[in-house]
Image (cartoon, rainbow, N blue to C red; front, side, top):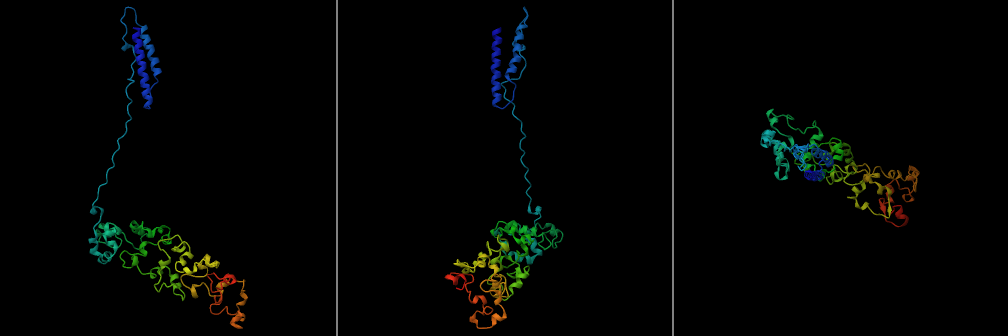
Amino acid sequence: MDKKYLFLFLLLLVVLLASASFALNSDTVISAPSATASASTPALTGATQSTAPGSAPTSSAESLPARSNPSAEPMPMLSTPAVPPVAAPILTDEQKGYIGAATCKGCHETQYASYSRTVHSKKDAQGPEYKEACETCHGPGAKHVEKGGGRGVDIFDFGKKVDPQARSAKCLSCHEETKQIAFWNMSKHKSEDVACNDCHDVHSTHTKYLKADQPALCFECHKDIRAQSNRQSHHPLKEGKIYCTSCHDPHGEFGTKMVKADAVNELCYKCHAEKRGPFMWEHPPVEENCLTCHTPHGSNHAKLLNSRLPYLCQSCHDWTQHPSSIYTSFETFKGTAASGKNRMMARSCLNCHTAIHGSNGPSSHGLHFVR
């Protein structure tokens, strides 16, 4: 009988050790086998010692304490099954409030006719016509029709009273990725609340859908520039040989005044390449900034100069070589011109210093821009 209980004890110990090893591998926390073994040992011993002489021995099943099956696998964690998202119902055009361009044409024949002549009306361009035509820009028109129409009645209106950012957002929904307006967010026009439709009109037949031709369109706001362009010395804006956009980008640039170059000089050199150099003798103002001597939009002095000669030169050369005191009526108009008193006549300083933008002349002749 003792060998039988010893065999059962050893078998139970092996099962407990196997269960503990499985639990550790599966990160399941269970009780230590030593505690179970120590609890079961007295029960087995007690069962042997409590058997009275002449009485029936207690069965092993009755002497062992009740326990859970150590070889059973741990119960897996329960997780809430993922609920698939409910798809939004697909609305028809009528449910969205779209009524179609044909309905718009019934009241707005003139606007529809001008719209149909533009690229926006071509489906291949993937513009408004590719989507909802008129309602791509103006929004659904069902309520607008129900209320009998009217400017701004339940329809998006591009009037001056509408927020400029909201008006521009309609255009940017299609044109935001184009390279021409890559710097729009940093442009002066946007910071001054200039909207796209302040200059453009999708119903216009002008170049780039402008509301008017250049420079008249720009002069509507830049009236000071219009006044300068009417002076005797000016860039050929009115003559149509250049445009405002030849130098400026209205949609924004890195340079100051939205010029199409990193610096003013680089912009001027695009046309006036002969002034770029390099020269053996550089004239510092020319190298630094053309605007030191010139004004770009118009001047009452020759060559778009900021002031007439010799006073322009005297603003820097006030005491060197030719002191200011020589420019008096006494020194200038008495004696012969060859005696050095010709600085108030003709081209003044430029009578001698002809290579004023830079010189490759030898020795002192080049140093003083004489040739």
